[in-house]
Image (cartoon, rainbow, N blue to C red; front, side, top):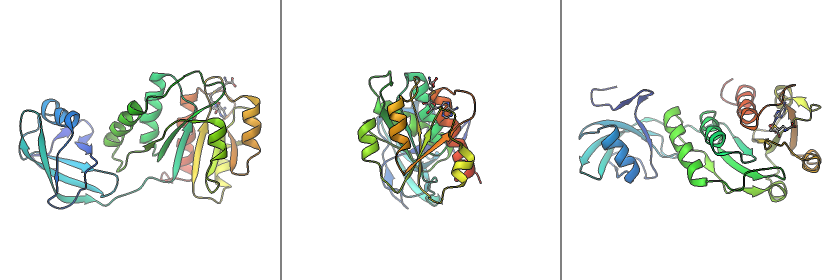
Length: 250
Ligand code: SAH
């Protein structure tokens, strides 16, 4: 840390940008980020922050120009090489706004690479706000020290989701039915490296969906214990177990 570092409660300010990062490269933040930097963080010329873009690692950058509405930064040195999160996706039936925000933020902290909404029969939410999902993911990535933002995908309908599934990726189906293997044991027994967690809506999966899932060779049905968890709890609990059995919590 140096005197010019801009500090947030979580440490040195980190921002996700799309621009390429490299020695001497200039980065001009978009309007919302410029506003945040100048009017919330009160950035001045020569202040320093960290930048990441999901490709080029993490860079220390200095504010070189500040005007009323915009500012620019210049990268000086790379402080970390690009580190990828382990290969796990979260596929989930959309839920109401507040828990949805929460799931996206927490799944980002828990290291999910892809967030895939799936409309199932009992899903009682009619649309997904992808822009909002993306904004939540960016903010959580910035705060958690991640060097990438999870990819937020367009929602799919259950049938299309299942038929277009990449067969080399295990789909860990969180099955509230009670007769599936406990998640930790089921994950420990798998040889594969690529996984996705799949959780249902508030009303659960319907029996036909459950049967369709259980008939696929790439599906690993798992139990999250004897209590029925809310959809948001189930998604985050499953990701946490995955990180400790297969991911970077080992
Ligand atoms: N209303 C449903 C519960 C849905 S819970 C019912 O009473 O059956 C929402 C989702 O969380 C479920 O579809 C499942 O994917 C997951 N889930 C909740 N509790 C679970 C458990 N104990 N084991 C596995 N998955 C669970």
